[in-house]
Every structure is written in structure tokens, then in C-alpha cells.
Amino acid sequence: MPERVVSSGISGDVIELLISRGMTLTSIAEAIGVTKSFLSRVKARSRSLTIDHLVALEAVIGEPLPLLLLHATPMASVPERLRSLYRSTEAVLSANTSNLPGRNGPIRRIKQSLAEKKMGYNHSRQALRENTTGKRRTRTAAA
Image (tube, rainbow, N blue to C red):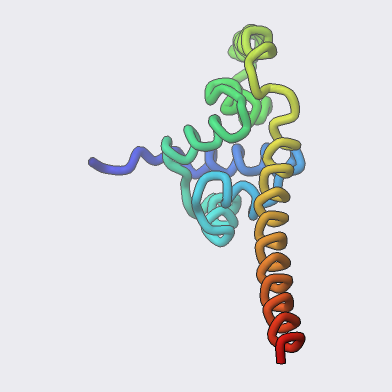
């Protein structure tokens, strides 16, 4: 089945939105399972995200995909005659999703999750060092 590719313009707008919210290319890449290099090209609009990438973002940031796309769309790109509809749709979606689980601080949650992963890695290395050091002390003491 062919990939369901999103336009490069929309893809770039989504990445720009997430960056403006405080995410880094690295954290976005880790969240959706791509490389930072790929996201740099998406941001430059030379590559595109897929629907699967957007669905992964939806799950990670806790914001429904339609609302994410509305927020990512620059108002200047919306035809004048459709702007009131755009604003109304955004207001309805925002009101109906404000009480969803995971809506409080999704960017903060992602940063915390990435920090915990890194911390877990560092704790594993520290435990390994302590275990190794402990074995050496035991051998030295026994010798």
C-alpha cells in the first residue's frame, strides 16, 4: 500500500508549530520515530510527513489531529471568506477537547518523558560502574 503523504507545506507548518511550542527537532523525531535530519528537510519543505507520522504526533502530544492541523495552518493562508468558519471550527474543537486526558502540558510531558529516558540511561551506566567498582573492591579485599 502506498504511503499516505501529507503535503510538504502542511508538514512544514506542523513542525514549525511544534517548535514554536518549545519542542526541538530531536524531541519531535524521537516522538514519531524519524531522524532529526529528516525533520530538518520537512521543516524546509523538501520532504513530507505521512498520515502515520501525524497520528503518532497526535498520540504523543495529546492534541486531536484536526485541531493540530488547524493550529498549524497560518491564518494568512486561509481565504478571507473562510476565516470565520476556520475560527468557529477551532473554537468548537478546542472547547470539546479541553477536558480530554493528556491535554494538560503535552509538551512538558514529552520533555519529561525524554528526560526520564535519558536519566534511566545514565542510572543504568552509573549502576554498571558501581557494580564493576564493587567487584574490583571485593577482589582487592579478598586478595
